[in-house]
Image 1 (cartoon, rainbow, N blue to C red):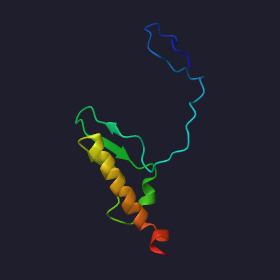
Image 2 (cartoon, rainbow, N blue to C red):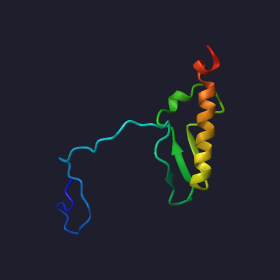
Image 3 (cartoon, rainbow, N blue to C red):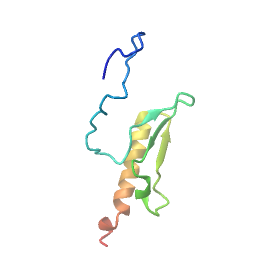
Image 4 (cartoon, one colour):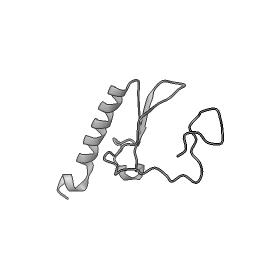
Length: 91
């Protein structure tokens, strides 16, 4: 990645010939949380929303007023998902 591309205003620029950055293995079911500029609410989405199955308690998107509340909701959903898996139920 070149720090100064064809634009001379000093803004970092990624050239179309630059390699994509390496991404490590994901350790969470969740993508990276972000804060909306308009509502200022924090939101996170599941990496694989189709993995929630038919359990109506499991959600693919969570929204909260702050990061700590969002983290608590994510932990609650992870616990529900663990209990909803067939292996956890002895099936």
